[in-house]
Amino acid sequence: MRVMVIVKANKQSEAGVLPDETILTAMGKFNQELEKAGLLLAGEGLQASSKGARVRFAGGKRTVIDGPFTETKELIAGFWLWQVKSLNEAIDWLKRAPFQEGEVEIRQVFEADDFGATLKPEFKEQEERLRARTGWKKKS
Image (cartoon, rainbow, N blue to C red; front, side):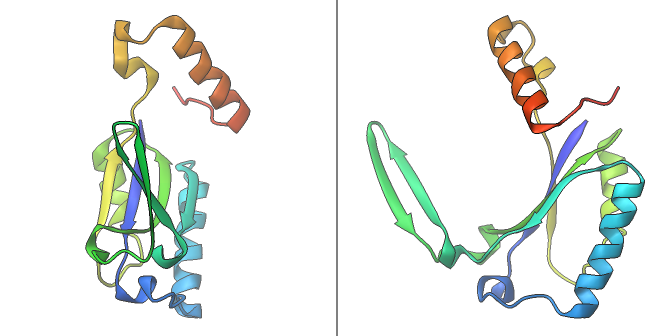
């Protein structure tokens, strides 16, 4: 199963404060461990919401809202995409992360098989082509 590990923003990340060398080194080491274990599919930090935008949909109307956004606890500062055997495996790995404070969320990613018969064959083929182009390979 794939999971997205969502690192929540805080006042410092929203202020654009970059991690210091100690934190970067510890996180780099943790990422190497994830990669060595074959779990790491992707992982990135995100710029502050002041450099972003939201698009609100209401029927046919589209409204663009420029950052920054005020509710820091609802914002994302970074993410990983992991391939794990179970939610418990993801939790065990996340407990090893070098965070000192904050909250990190783990969410399972939908797979084409999760949709069963409601996913038409042409959409499943489209999904498989996308995965092939992006280099993602399903592990058995």
